[in-house]
Image 1 (cartoon, one colour):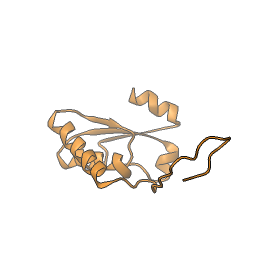
Image 2 (cartoon, one colour):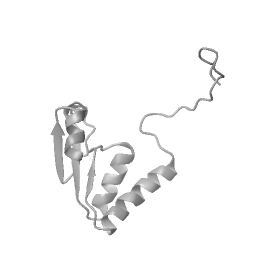
Image 3 (cartoon, helix red, strand yellow):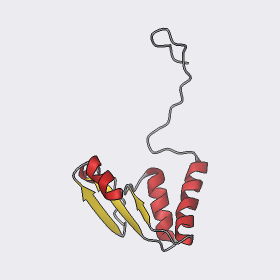
Image 4 (tube, one colour):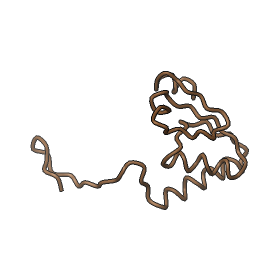
Length: 102
């Protein structure tokens, strides 16, 4: 346990690497992608190609579904987008990204 701040009791800590998810979450993300397609939905999402967003996106494509990905330029420059998205919109900012997705 970590030491408390300003007299607060210490809190337990749990460390996770970025993009690391328990297998149950990966399986649930994959199932979500499959279900979206089965129910006739198009995926509109943050265009991530890694982590759980990437799992959902690949699952949608595995089942023949369509998707619109919206990602800010700074993340696109870091090559974090799912480039196979049916439509990929690159915005100038996170605020613009949110506006497109609403």
